[in-house]
Length: 88
Image (cartoon, rainbow, N blue to C red; front, side):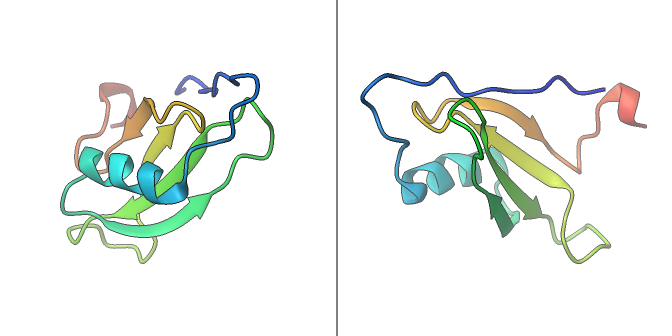
């Protein structure tokens, strides 16, 4: 089971612009196509962005990048082309 990730709220700071977050996320999965963005539901929730590589069979893709919505820090990357040992 993959660990849950959380944003670290910063008092008086708004979440980063989506364009900045997308740029950071895309750099983690070069060659993948953006499929969807899941906006944080709570102040400590991470921004989750879904990608699909051309090699993937499904329409939606199974690669994700999780970002801290305030700092833009990459919290976790799930790359469908590089499954973790426990996922195989």
